[in-house]
Length: 181
Ligand code: S3P
Image 1 (spheres, rainbow, N blue to C red):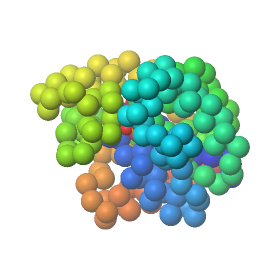
Image 2 (image 1 turned 90 degrees about the vertical axis):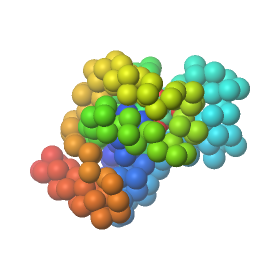
Image 3 (image 1 turned 135 degrees about the vertical axis):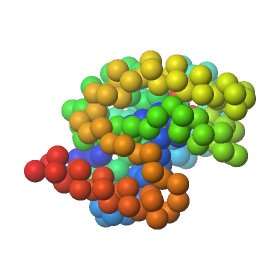
Image 4 (image 1 turned 120 degrees about the vertical axis):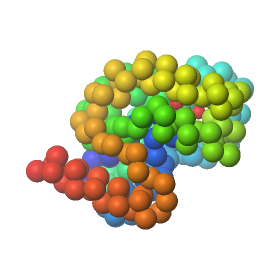
């Protein structure tokens, strides 16, 4: 199985941190879709949103997902919204293995309230700690119909430190191996 593995899930679900560790465990290359876009466009996601609007960002995201799907042996950490626009979810379902990182809104809101977390995410940049939980609950509710189409639904609650991240990544390796049997 050398097709890409697409990690999907809400902002703060651990796509990047778990993805990087998973790539290490599986000896694959790791691609963070937002970082890939930032390098390609010489601009941060925040700047792209400001200059081209969310619509402009979604179009870029859609094109880039097609590009990275050509690579072999990669783990792709998608953006939180990636599966929810255009036919991106159908595309990922047919071009790789999709894994949904399932985390409760309460845990997501706690992670997103950590310092530095809001700053790089235009959709929550102006939300107070108090507003975050409701925003996450509503956003997750709208996105679940997309996320739950993933082939694997994986609980990614326990990523508090490096040790937990390694342990969780190893569990995911097992789940993927079982799925591919
Ligand atoms: C977004 C999530 C972000 C980034 C952009 C939009 C979203 O990625 O793609 O700010 O719509 O949920 P992360 O999920 O890595 O924060």
